[in-house]
Image (tube, rainbow, N blue to C red; front, side, top):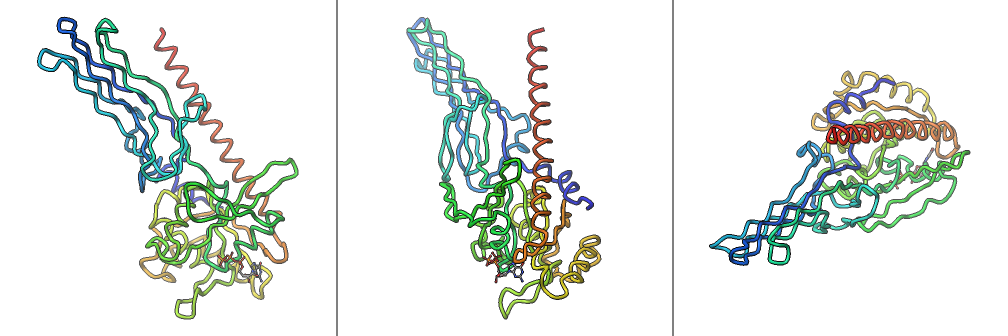
Length: 370
Ligand SMILES: Nc1nc2c(ncn2[C@@H]2O[C@H](COP(=O)(O)OP(=O)(O)OP(=O)(O)O)[C@@H](O)[C@H]2O)c(=O)[nH]1
């Protein structure tokens, strides 16, 4: 398949589920020996859980990824006690874990307003320190989005997501409970011959208009942020949500799903995506699949099938388009291997990127010593 996903990657940058930052508390202020004055304490650095924030936004807004709190003021004749330096707050998304570079957990941000101190400011100089202030704490920290699953199922009601999850995971999926959410996703585990496990989440509640918070809209869409990749699921024969709503073909369903994600948060579309075309056991399924594939090859040509406000800005192209029947089991093992292949591909890229980052850090260190 050709790769609008890649085009999106270039346009929006990859989805960010972890971020490494440099943080430093402010230095303390100088004490004033003559009058026994005390310098102000340096500010602390905090990570604060904030609504509508993403790791990608932090990365884009602060490309240096460096956060330093203000220094405490020196003590002076007019103010024997120097003023405290201002704290620095890093506004971060809800649902992350904050760790040190050595993987020690500093705290979890589960609810809006949760905060974790990540670098303490230095103390001001005083009689006890011969009026010399101390420096603020400095370190690298990591912000990790708590992923609920490797893959997230994205589809309208009745597409067969639950049936698919059961067929894939060969078991009754578990209902998971997460501290940072009120919606309970069902998680299925795909187990491979080499015992590798991949988790797939079925997230209930996506309907047309979800971006406007229709149905369980935003809760659903928040979950999509917490999976590495997306598994779109459509009924090959299309669907009609209710008697008053229009019939949507499989192609329209794909574009409507894409548009819902785009309207909610464009960067979700930079996640790798696979398309599952379900219910291949139904009559005329082969013809409809052929038609869908043709439409996906040239989506612009078929855009007049969609309401104008639901045409995505960028058509998503899928790493794999996999026809299956969750009921008969047709295509399920092929889908399992496509899912594995897609995640393995990204894991290899991630290892490379981490390796590169570490090499760069080492290089910088040795340049600093020279
Ligand atoms: N013929 C056929 N029917 C299917 C297939 N997969 C699911 N169905 C049927 O489609 C209906 C919806 O299936 P679900 O698995 O509940 O669909 P869902 O997407 O989880 O639906 P919601 O829970 O409403 O979001 C059920 O009646 C299933 O039996 C399939 O491969 N072939």
